[in-house]
Length: 146
Image (cartoon, rainbow, N blue to C red; front, side, top):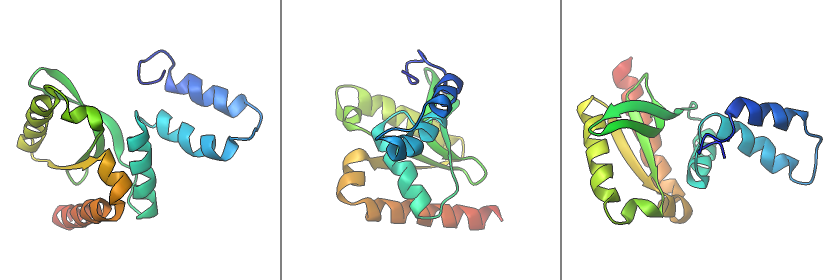
């Protein structure tokens, strides 16, 4: 609903805060703020949790940039160090999606950002391997920016 812009993040958060507690309170207490912060998929929610567990600062989610065909949305962006992480669901492998993804990644790379791609399947099967790369990139770029 938020992703389709049918409900504003402000309305979701206000409603969540007004609701009494229930059986899924713990889960929703973690998910609702992530959604209001810009997470648009379960994979992005999982990635956010992995970042917190690794001690990484919160990235900007769904950062808007200009691309070859208009607006593009970056799943996770650490603007201060120029790191972008794209969390790719299964639809990224279908039909023309790889072409669009390549054009988007190339455009972002040409704007002087480092782009890492993390497939949702990778989050499920080998999260440590992908998060090791994200942490390494974050440290490297932080050192460069200092």
